[in-house]
Amino acid sequence: MFRSTTVNRHPHLVSKISFVMSLLTRVMNHPAAWLVWIVSVVTAGPLSAQITVTELQSPYSFVNDPIEKGYFISSVNGEAETADNNGFITKLNSNGKLLNLKFIQGGKDDVILHAPKGMALVEHVLYVADLDTLRGFDTTTGKPVMALTVRSHATSRPESLPPSLSDVTFDGKGHLYCSDQKANTIYRIDLVTQTASVLVTDQSLAGPSGLAVHPKSGQIIAVSWEKGKISEVSPEGVVTELFSNGFFSNRFQNLRGVDFDRWGNMYVSDFTTGKVWRMSWDKRFQVIAEFLPSPGDLSIDRANNLILVPYEQAHAAEMNGLETPTIGKTKQEKRTLADYGFIPPPPKPALEGLEKK
Image 1 (cartoon, rainbow, N blue to C red):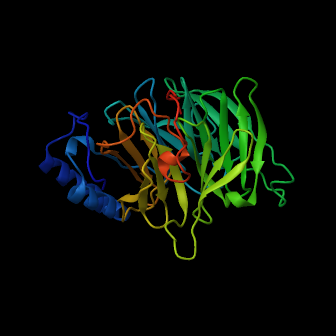
Image 2 (image 1 turned 180 degrees about the vertical axis):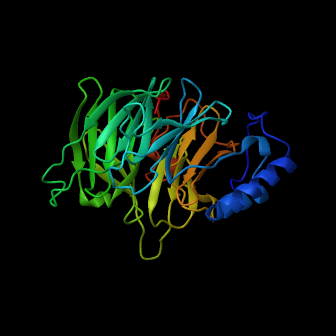
């Protein structure tokens, strides 16, 4: 589905012929997923750089573990707003090979996990947005290590409904940020005190679904489900609109995921149009994949230059190599919001090191 690949990390994959045969078998068993597999066969780069995972149940988020070099996929497995305790999280190894389909499973071994959505990793803990609760699990054992219930606020939820967390991201400085799509709210979680507070409630966020922290500026990027907007939120809660659809421009519909590669390019997934967009440092908007079945909360494995995309309606997920840019700024040049095309570049940028997401 993606234009080109630059990695060769999967020697365990079978030959192309046997892969296609097994692919066709999966397609017949999962009719909704036909577009994922057929497009992959036709347009993917080297086979060794493409991995597909099946048997998922409404997968929402797909993230990598930079410490243990593995991957995790969350599956809602039922109604997205129902506390049915049957959600699960799948674990893959460093080559994308399935280790455990239900590594963490609601209702098993004292685990509570209803409808897991967005995820973020901090050292050896996997944090998961699960309805009104942010849950933490040990990445090695899968055992729960934290459960923080986020309380509703009258200003953010006039309907007095409980919060419903959509995504979570880490700022590298001891704080997690969680989006509440329905309440137009972003919460800040202090990992030291394990307390939650409202960072911002603003109607202009227009249903913030996916979150990411820019790896250079430290600003929070929120993508909108309702209006296809992209906003920047400062650590102080100031909201700045970066991109919105206009009368003559209607690129986005329902955005679900957002993340950055190592060069500062931004990637967003449009759930409804079935597209993944890249906004490059030189202000270009480019569709790098289309005709995808419900691309969800994507993420980027920056170390290996891979894009990780779940497909909710196809009950599958895919890992693909990304192309490496041949031109760009030198290491001595500071990257800013201009690197993905929304503000003019600053004069004479200073050196700035890369922060972890």
